[in-house]
Image (cartoon, rainbow over all chains, first blue to last red; front, top):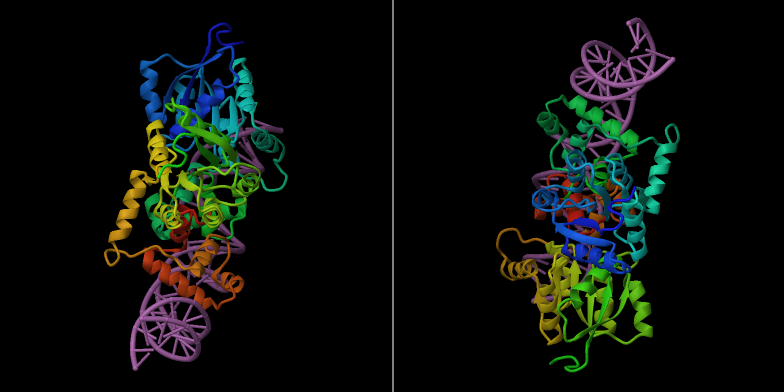
Length: 222
Length: 222
DNA sequence: CCTCGACCGGGGAAAAACCCCCTTTTTCCA
DNA sequence: TGGAAAAAGGGGGTTTTTCCCCGGTCGAGG
């Protein structure tokens, strides 16, 4: 189920760093002797992408970063899945942590690569994706597999609720739990419940390590 | 005081991400019609660089990342300044924060660029540096200038002592202040002194915001 | 001499962490 | 479709840690 088997495969790149975009283009062109791929355009963020998608040809494959200003990778992918479900998304991110990988997998991306990639990696990924398949880095595969297995094993983790997410973000600030309870419109005891639940689930020892986890998974940017 | 006015200027790149290295090479070659620059070799970390420097021609200019495994940018620059003072260093980093910029400026680097650079930026920087000058991004210039002015003004900040730095790193972990006092071999009250001093100096409201600051300036990576 | 930096200490209020308990609503699945 | 289980919210009370003000010693150096 190839996309346009005889015309070049149209690619767009969404990343806030010019250097990365140029690096990606170079990696794509290196070894692409048959001009199978053509990079249509680049965008600096999800917002930028939304504008550019209106005026241009729709790409077949979208290379997507996660950490971006305005509208990050998760939001952008959500939006794309809803309004352009035909575009296949390959995430290329600095983040190799479970949370990021799982969220993206759940959003239905076609591939997940680290930014530490070689020419072959990106070509294998592009080939797999353009022929209807999927391509995950070793690390992403590992995360996905271990998620499929461990339901009762070890520490069952992840999947925070929206309220827990919100609490976790606020716990990274200088607010006390009383103040957090106030802005979240629940009692302090409820907040304490969220805290305890997260402590238990993730093994946090104190608020600092919890906040650090939030940073690590990109939920909060200091 | 040009370096080899008629032979190409030899460049080496130190960055742990292949993508960045390839992107940099592409940016350097783009617009370098006269082949003024040649990229000698790439290294993935300071440690890797040390090995490669022994076996190869010494480059004129070194493009240097900060966040790297094994031996980070600061260590690597310190080492280079000591053992290869002739190599001119251009830092190209994700970090645009005061701490990082100031530390690098103090170590005597010739330039500081964000990773958000265009072709012209890198060429201006390389020209300036190879002809004996300096090149700082807008942000780096701003930081340097405001550091020259504000000695008594506003909040005199920065310049943490080595002990304070160490404490700040440990304060990002799950250790209590008692435990931190233990590993730092001082009394809890001394630790409390460090804490209070940093709180006053930087206006932290609680340990979480202090830890977040440590992350922001790159002192601790969650 | 006397200040400054690094260290140590008391006491106390507040916040955070950690227990146990409870109700209501939603989900889900046999 | 009925009931069990989970998720969401709340409560009382304890211990530990954090935070903040106050004070002190000691040695180095202008």
